[in-house]
Length: 151
Image 1 (cartoon, rainbow, N blue to C red):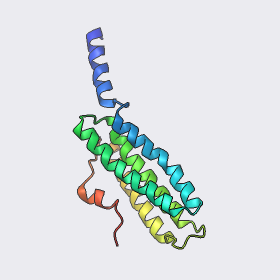
Image 2 (cartoon, one colour):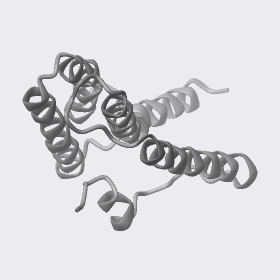
Image 3 (cartoon, one colour):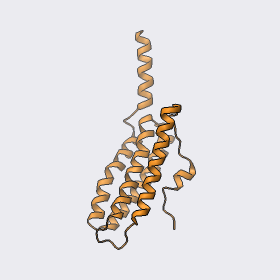
Image 4 (tube, rainbow, N blue to C red):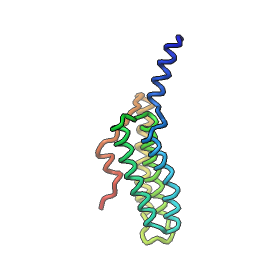
């Protein structure tokens, strides 16, 4: 392979990955908030847990906006962002389902249902990836709306 071709391929790969962007850093910080959320719930500091959850939600919106606005979208960011979202939601369900003396405990059936839904989505995505080679799963507005709790 010619050196020019190798350099061109290398630039394309680097362009696709671009891991060291501000939006990706914000996403990784959101992932780092998860243990602090669990600790806050464990210590019955639900106000702090709520603030951590709110800040994580705001950073989720902000890093996506920043990535699009500043043309910092990356392949690694496309994978990390939903992982960070699922980490927080999954851990929140589990932490709030375990009765640790809090006034409100999420019913086990609801946690199982929510986590099973995510499992099925990941399973279908995996099958589509393996069988059809489909690699992009852009979130729909309806899918984004399921992140926010409703009454």
